[in-house]
Image (cartoon, rainbow over all chains, first blue to last red; front, side, top):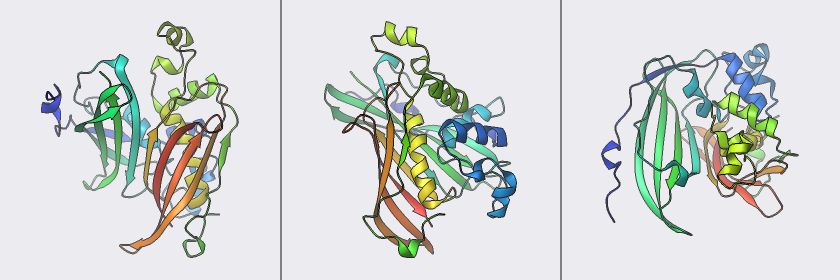
Length: 151
Length: 137
């Protein structure tokens, strides 16, 4: 099979972005997915549990790209046909929880290109990674989005 | 209260989480919270022009509903890994039932870990998500 036209983008990181994890975003996001634990809403309660502030809901990393400072963070522009795309899956890996007040460096890359047999022919699977690092450069979290393009 | 690692057994069910009915308002709220403004999730007129019966839910909205199962079982800070595959679209008016089951217990690097399998179903028998996760308790 011919090499995918985006192969040269694999492993290349976009410019890093600075992301501020905000209490309002945590509350808004938690509410939007039905989470009710006070650790997402009440800072005093979060601190009672030993957290520095509100804790991020498990899937918050998907939303953090919108809270970046201008000037960075773009994923490499993958060429694909948006009419043939499917969101196949998502994986989130935590090295430690994320908290309000965290200032994180986000780095995006096209991690890999693979193929699989689908019901209607071969699909190309693009795995995009956003990795989040603390101010000491230690990874906090990685978000992997798998998107496929049909023929 | 989060479950205690010592008293968990392989095969235990996680607390299930039922979202009674997906509404278009849910999808607008999720779009605003997540920053995902793909119009297929809120613009019914546009969705119909491409042959869809209506708007449909963000896959990540369902993953967010499913996260309630992990938080209820392990607590908000327990999630180490959370991996899902989207298997079917979720439409307005459908319920989403999220469930999970313990598949393994192990200790690694001084952490007490639990592996779980996860599922979201819309209509009975329709799996919209299959997934797995690792929690540290």
